[in-house]
Length: 423
Ligand code: HEC
Ligand code: HEC
Image (cartoon, rainbow, N blue to C red; front, side, top):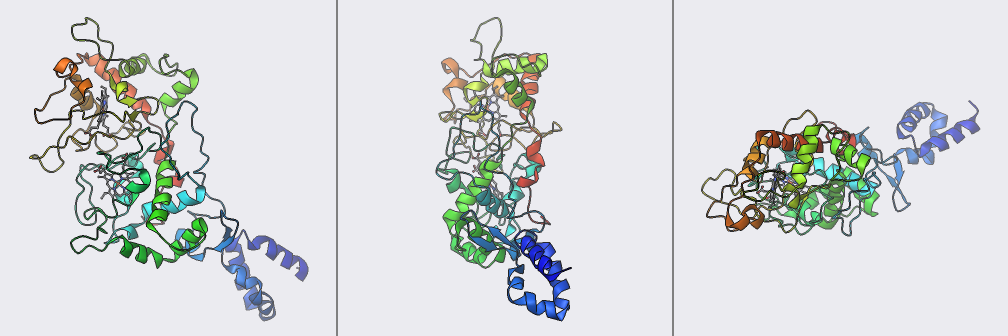
């Protein structure tokens, strides 16, 4: 090959094909004269490089060697511009809009076991993609012990009116939420209390990891790690986890009207939808037409009404002597089941319900515990415990409708999967 065109080709691939360059390097550097030619200028460029969102060039050999085929900083996954159906109006994004670079860093943090004191627990240990980012056990295993409540599904966390997070809303934003598990003694163990290292110890640890030097530089322009940068990146990744490919969405797209019969639904599913969105029939009425779910879990986002109070489930996981009337903020009711119809983990803050029929039975006949000081007034009309009087066929229809709220893509799409080769 003439030297000139070889050089031209080398220049063309230098920015895009790091692996090819490597093989060129070894080929070039065994032939002594070429090596001198390349080692000065060109071989400096052998480290893979990417153009950062700020327009500068950053090298990323450690990202390349750690994540190999799963992350390519020159061809990021689409997190920022995913299609969102027009009928989805609620969005809790504040001042931290999703960027492809930020969500990519968030993905690495979410799956990185280095975020725990024991180097054994990642966020994804409890929030599993195969379960809509929930967990199958009542209390999840953390670095130093079990969680106090059941792990929540994270799908469509963005599409809600409520901006606060956790069952009891103790995190004021999703950003604020993301570092709380890190600072929880049981979960990830950087609490700074009772002999635990604090979050600055974690930051120092991450600061020493080469792929974070490269990723933080790529996203933020320098390698400095701060709690705020971590929070923003993880919140962007979580807000990107969306699911709008359900049978329900196909029906909404076809009709544009929640109240219309969906042409793609069975008669049973349409009956279930009608029961879900209609108010409970008043006591004494001869015909039962509603179950009243919509007044709290609002379709089409199925987010919880921020004014909702307790729903009558007041157990505490692992401690039958205590009660919890503060868990009023469930995740979206989308993806309660996986695509095969299996329950995604368990339901309610105490993980006390493991199937949809039992959920519906709970609401059909509310049992009021006298210790419950926070039961939502909607569930005790006229001071009496709610009694929906649903027939078995109506209960089955409601369950059939709830099972139309599951998508497929979110369980397998690799943009939300672990970037680590072995996880
Ligand atoms: C040991 C298991 C465990 C680990 C590790 C864990 N979580 Fe969780 N997560 C939970 C539990 C349990 C809850 C509910 C806790 C509560 O409300 O009191 C939860 C709640 C959440 C919520 C609130 C969802 C909502 O709709 O309000 C988000 C977001 C979340 N976790 C993200 C993360 C992130 C990010 C990490 C890693 C930094 C992480 N979790 C690590 C178990 C875990
Ligand atoms: C008064 C408001 C209200 C009404 C009405 C209501 N819910 Fe709920 N729902 C809640 C609250 C609050 C929670 C979280 C409870 C907890 O875990 O302590 C919840 C939790 C759930 C869960 C568990 C979610 C999860 O991820 O674990 C399901 C499923 C559910 N409701 C279905 C329904 C159905 C079906 C109806 C209608 C029959 C209904 N709800 C009516 C407030 C309500």
